[in-house]
Image (cartoon, rainbow, N blue to C red):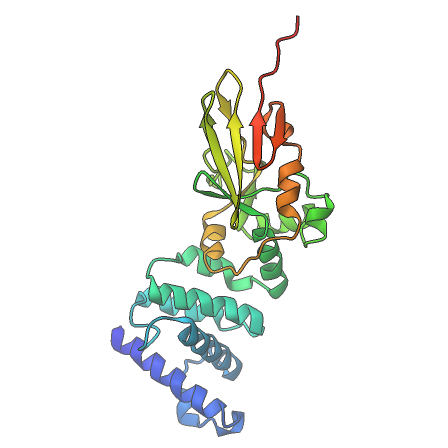
Length: 275
């Protein structure tokens, strides 16, 4: 099988060199090496993705040497119809990462991306701009999708629903169902304890200043295992104004307790018992 993969690499190299001279330069001998289901367009797509992966990988040799043979052949089968340059770049990043760190991407992720289009990729990247790190969990903090901080940056309820159908995120609607949950573990804070909320290089501190334990809700949107794998290669950027939004959002509704904001601290305060 390894010899077969090395042969694929040589075919790709030959095709790339000949494609640079023009499509008419492709000889029958080169094209014959591709099986019957891979026509010229599919060959060009795969060559472009493989070449892109070579430029991104830390490996100096063949891109396929460290990749499981079954995974690699499945990858080629799924990416052959991808012709958009931006989506090809996504596939190249996946192949490069898998070559550098085998096991980074499951076949489930590769299979799920077969019909992943340019708009889907753009929506997912937009979503990643709202991800915070809370207690070592990567969490999309989206409380009101209709708020302009989200809608002006490509996210709304319809987009979230669509990303759910692509299985890159899931919502509370599906937790506890038959799909299996990736719901993050909610931090449980004793009185006086705190947890850090990181948004890129900025940090908020949530402190439980009440006199009882407090479960910190992480919202109703979570990345699936597929979404987490894609996040590892996503070049997401902070959304302008989102950190300020986090500081002044309605934390009380998220935590089920009355909160106040002091500088970069969100304090869950003790609520007096009514008489």
